Length: 465
Ligand code: FUB
Image (cartoon, rainbow, N blue to C red; front, side, top):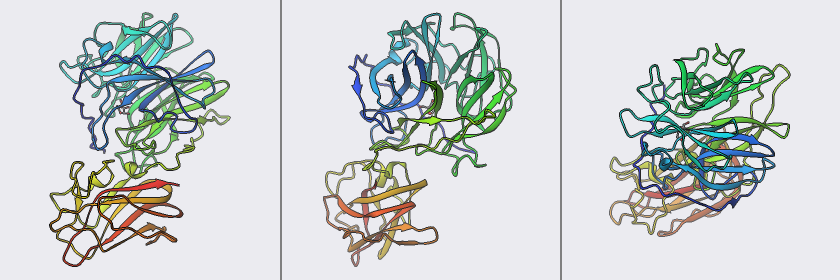
């Protein structure tokens, strides 16, 4: 089982943002001007809106830093606009941090925005609800306090990730929960009051977090993030999207399979919506330039159903992400790292000022000499045609190397990447190596020291072809 814990980020002063719409390019990720996560789609008329948290974590920060939610929009699911922050922690006067996942549900001409937010009181995460008169707001707190908190009887171990669904008979349902704890409760017609007891839905096999509820042809679907290694992920720090179906909105549910496999970010959070006659899956990855587990980006791909109502697995498209540094989404390993140095330095996105700059930490292998290596591994094959390395030189036991070579895993062994340009060993600069594209899950940098010295690296990048 995963040992992940979502660490609360320190909250700063929240600034109200009145941003002008920012046009974006087509292809995934759909927006790269900011990092966006936990998307929740909503179709109103001819527009698809996507409500998403903003990942603000600086490169190298291993916590969520999230203060506000943005609204993205598109009229063709291809070209996207960032309409700016339409809600923030300041929308909820009783809250103070962690603008995590949310979803907007329309009712009676109003738009109810259910969010995960840190209530800063007893317990940790709560579910709040804001209301607005249009899909773009303005939104204000609709309740004056949490709708769900740790003091709600039978609440989840982590009260996050609300999804709200209004059935054809007008009954509204709220689903939520993290830490393997899905929960559901009815909502009153006012959309801000719960009705009856909180129930624990049954049949959501391997449920981890991030539920998404919808109905199609009379069948209820509940999609959710799972992190089992029974076909879902190769490493339970990651997640996939499973789904279940039911003939009743409160279950019991039957798990049906995987909609989306493991993505490049550890978290996986998705929503599904029909727009202009086509179903779409909206999810997040770490695929944007400089992206990572806390610097995620929204992606959109088509989703299809089989005749029997089961969902075909979505094949993520990456569009024109050529040139993206893939290192942030890789798991790094090494032949040796000194106990006081940090392997995490190599792919934390730092920009060294010079080869002595430890600002973003440093990888070093003192007292080893001769040939050592660092390596990246991805859960799925990447197409790579360039790397760059910034060497660490502490003017003591670690010096610039004598030579280096880029290698890749060919399925059975590490071999030199064919046709690579010279692997540079200069200090105070990025040493770029180019080569004909290789498709691989594992890339290695083999480093040979100068006699009497060890070697080190401040940053190693691997670029998508
Ligand atoms: O973005 C913060 C949290 O990460 C969300 O609430 C979860 O669903 C996961 O994506």
